[in-house]
Image 1 (cartoon, rainbow, N blue to C red):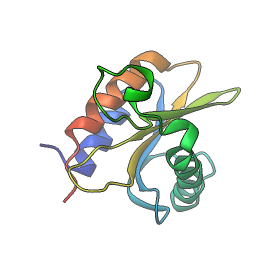
Image 2 (cartoon, rainbow, N blue to C red):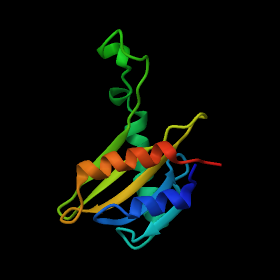
Image 3 (cartoon, rainbow, N blue to C red):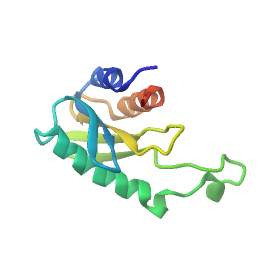
Image 4 (cartoon, helix red, strand yellow):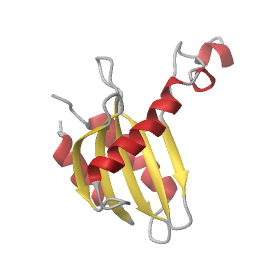
Amino acid sequence: MPGIDECLLDVMRLPGARGAAVVDWTSGLALGTIGESPNGDHEATAAETAEVARMAAEQPAFARTREDLAPTAPATTSVEDVIVTTASSYHILRFVETAFDSSVFLHLWLDRAEGNLALARIKLGEIAERLVLA
């Protein structure tokens, strides 16, 4: 199973990928980075995107269970990803599910003209499922 560096390399193979990071949204620290950063500083970007991820993950409006929606569905669900759209790019924050209480997400900075948001979202989900945090 791939670790952080290998997963980041896979993310950068996506068409239009400009940069990526694995971030701990509790501390705001980048656990790994690759490529460019939207503001030229990976650590500052990690702290900024951690704020967005934390706000989404901790809001009761987004923490509804599937039981609330359909009683026969699996009991829980959480935020899978957050997408922020700008004039020239997409920022996809994909939460990583782990056996322990994880507060990690993958951040992909995707060029809007060259990238495919749907494909990137699917691939980022697959990469997040394979990511091994040690």
